[in-house]
Length: 141
Image 1 (cartoon, rainbow, N blue to C red):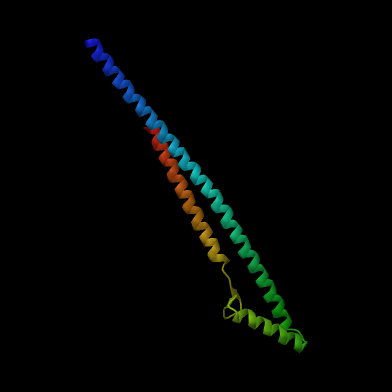
Image 2: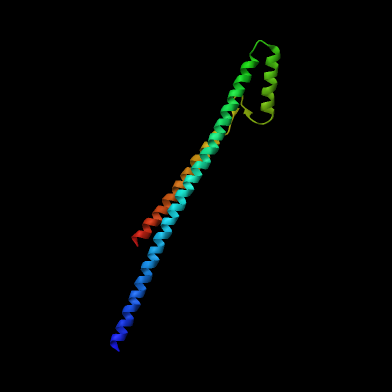
């Protein structure tokens, strides 16, 4: 009878520790998955935001080039060409495509986009760091 009780107690302990090991293994796998998700997110965020910034920078370069050309034409000696260039500049400004400051330099949006890119990168890196800390805590248990 005592042998049966000892056997049942040993089986209970074995079952308890087996379940504990399995739950610890699952916690490690879950933590690894979280890191993987954050790494994937970082890659997608970087690709998406960099593509957006490149488009804005390209657009703004085109706007600056066009404005520079039109301003040069307004300085030309040909009155008809100067008038056409001034009209074109007026259309660009009145359309709301750009905001012109006192010195007639356009206010463009790439600086805001760059700031958002930096913010998103920091946020993603923080999430990744948090996931790695969780993984390390799981391994310590």
